Image 1 (cartoon, rainbow, N blue to C red):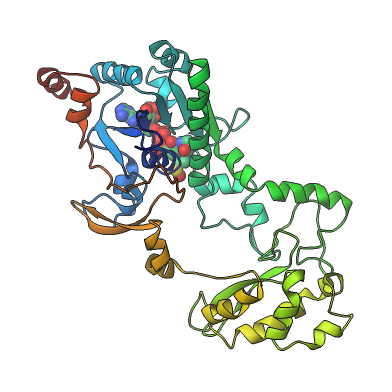
Image 2 (image 1 turned 45 degrees about the horizontal axis):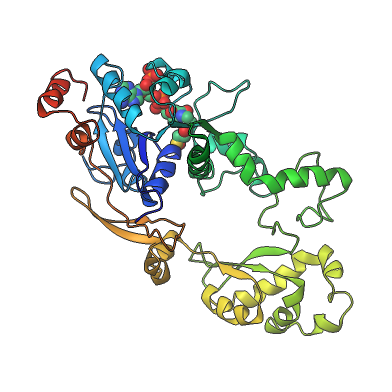
Length: 414
Ligand code: CAO
């Protein structure tokens, strides 16, 4: 048995933010029925294709464990089928441009009339306000949610990150909203509206930067590299690779950095483990010297501290550094490339990196469910082909006869 067995999701999501959410719910056991436009489908099926005429990795890696049905929700017969699907499902999830579902004839009021128990969940770019009608993609959300203004080096431009905090991050938020609403429905008997704006999701993940904005009013941010030599403006600045948690940290070069762009390691010079670190890099002299042996004394000289650490790390590989520093309780982590992560045996062992077989693509790697439940294991099942389950869903979920299905096909509704 899976945690969400018995929960049926009418999945109108596309691209990345919404599909991330419904994929998670599918891994927890929900029956996710992905509704796509006949002949077209989710635009990502054809985006960034590596193999001609085959569903892209963009699509396959975001739509595991789902069933696909094609319905033209703008045709009369299609709308009637969609109405019956709303009646039969617990959740309707979507992330179209603002107003798209209303334009199809399905306002929240109408959806509640059809099924008062349904949870109607949406991702939008912005919440109510001046930008509520805007279309939004990942990097736009990273910029509007505070990610870009606080990422990068102080002397460089705002920078977006490779982690998809706008899309996948908001999808995660939406998934939590949906299961919370399902939990409340157990007591209230009613569905509700769940909305996550990507700007809000990114800002939530940048919470500590709003913390720093307010600390700035009371003096410089001492853990930022701008202290004590640089200047602070009136907004949280970009902190480069500085550690956010009040324990100084930085990325330093390791052996082979000249050829390998990822021969680096992150090292945190936590006060409690500093003595071991100083000894390891050959700086016992720091331990007795009041110029170096307290965090306060080191704070204005962090650049020198990390330069000295780097002289040592450049003589070792990032994995050797890890092996030496871990027993000394020095928090550190090698910069791992996607190539290294894809080959890491422990991630294969836990199902976080999984190989999947696909009928037209063949074998590919994906990221499995990162959330591990002891009573609800997640098996990764390949993504559906466009409309692969149309007949099956119309017959088994809506009880349509073969003749009715043929008639819907003839009307080009499915
Ligand atoms: N049958 C008939 N029509 C369908 C359909 C179906 N099964 N499924 C979708 N459509 C229609 C929609 O009704 C819409 O038509 P209208 O414009 O006439 O209302 C159209 O297809 C596509 O909707 P869209 O405007 O959402 O698509 P887009 O590619 O232009 O925009 C995006 C994409 C992501 C920018 C936009 O959907 C958006 O801003 N979504 C909210 C924020 C979000 O989730 N962004 C993250 C995306 S991941 O980077």
